[in-house]
Image (cartoon, rainbow, N blue to C red):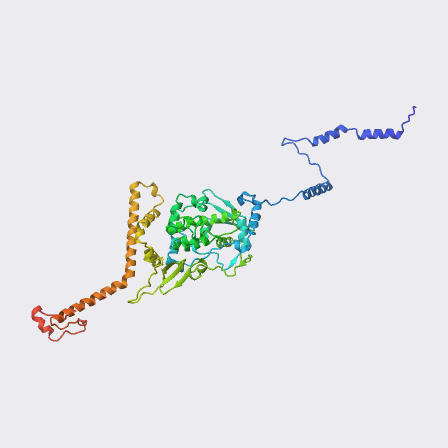
Length: 533
């Protein structure tokens, strides 16, 4: 037996190790098999290797520590450009930042004011809005007397998105949120609040550059000539007192309800001119709903405009969708929503006086009056109130007939402007397919339209003339009767005839004829009958 120096235990250990590692190739093959990518759908997908929870915790802690070491992402600076060019998730925050630059928060909300129809219809101003189908712009529909839900309104405007739709701008939509409530402003939803753009026919939708930069329009000089007093409006900075008198008051309404703004109320901006010209001429028919949506979107989109316009219309819309409820947070205006009335035009530069028959206004030395709807009738021999030489209705400035007609609600115009006004009326009343008609049909349509309008104006002018001169005409009839009576009596007296006066009326059914009358007439006319007088 051969002895060896190797202990038996060592041999056993080697053998044990050898026996335990008898299949190392199989173990490696097994690990490699788990890493094979199986492309076939029929091959079984091996279960993923399990990870110890402690390792997951360590990885999570490492990610959190790395996130803390990185600087937080900052809000982008809005130094210029449009708000909708910035990533949407920052737009509401940036809009709030812009609005916070107002020294007083409520100064960033521009409310509409109701315009008294009874007060301003005698001046012909309500008719200007009705001619365009804008009469709904004279009222407010939020049902509030002084509440302003600023938080809800600002959140909705800040979160707005604009969808032009398939046929812009008629399909344009402004979609915003108040909390989880989605509110859409569109042509259809606005008409659910009130009947805006009520006139039949197609409305126009000027582009943004045409609306806010009309000085590039080829008709710019014509518009300036129409809205300003002769020789005025040629300076770079246009002044309100240089407008024609009715347009000065219309501009106040426009700045509040149509193209709202707070600053530079005494001045005139270029964007005011097309709206004033449109109201004065009754054409083109610009969509009021389009103006509202454009005003809201541009005020939100421009960095320098720290104003939310039409907030009473927005309030009515949010109420309709349930975004504003009785529990919504609100701010109460100290003076409430004061409407436009004649007695309260002092802050806007107008003086007001009321007489028995007229409403009278005065602005920068020019006077204007309108016949009251409840004006009493003139007594016999009473003369009407005389026009002032400074008055816009006086004959001295050539606008008497037009303004008196407005006050009397007759609708005629002065003779010197008839040709121009009728031509404009003919163009405005043309059918929307007029341009596609043959020439003879166009001429015939225009001729009949002109003839009908001229006849209407002639009737109105005659009625107005008779209303103005009715007393004088009746007095002339009475004077002629007295003169004829004096001539007859004087003629009778000159030839020695006794004065003959008309006898009193005799009723043949009740009054008997004079005695002897029947006997006298019997032989001449046969059987006489009682006389008829």
